[in-house]
Image 1 (cartoon, rainbow, N blue to C red):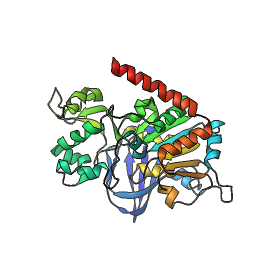
Image 2: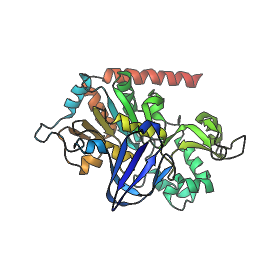
Image 3: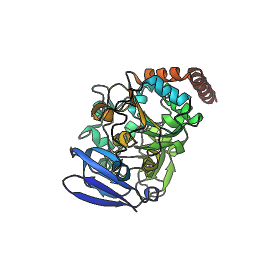
Image 4: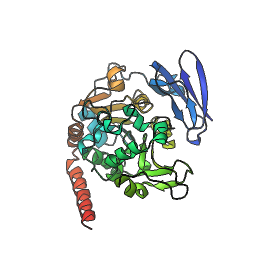
Length: 353
């Protein structure tokens, strides 16, 4: 039995019945106020945390998540590339957000003027976030399915960033990819589902909201593309893609971070604002000796407000350009271009058939 603690004005513990994390104590440290509840495996944590830092209590006592290195020389992108190329990094964790998918044409949620949240007025929502709130979905599922038609896998294609992560997997150096995205582009790029933690869920599977029957995402495609709400043929309940809505528990797979992050030897964070919890706190859930590479438009999370580490590297600017610079430093661009070309050819042949 694992336990979860939230440190605020007083301590309390919530038991988490999850075999994958048995025997591990997860501690949450409140840093700034409360804003929203979240669920851990049906156990509701009423701390309403907005900005929380995850860390293992057994490691925190040893200071393993503190600033690392002190007087050590600051690492560079070339140092990271050398470590990957020389296979010093064999267990790489990638954390990614909407910024890796916007180059594929998918709008993000929060960009002023162009984000999805700013373009939802047509659905007459009480407020933008309601489209992803489970209670509103039960009241009116039509706005979500209208948005799902726009976001549904197959409408967009993976870009160089997705294929770079695929290449990490092909070379046996990807431990896991943690993604906030629900667009399925990671799967389309050939990253196996077992290597993915889709923290906010997936369109690949679906569940009836009434009888709880399981469905494959493809079984919903015709209804969604026709602009209709998919209903269960057995009970007539609404079939909902397994996207994590506000008010729902996290996917069980998310808890792999309890075993992945303690053994990771490199963390690459790309295309995310690191504002949504509990995903955002994972960037701090590694030992202080572990290198972290941020490829992003801006400094975010611990790269912006944490204690500086000599082994943190920030490559700021356009995400695809940053990944390209890393691939060039690795000497991987010919392989990457060949991989993308081969997949593009397969996709073209499939469309012709």
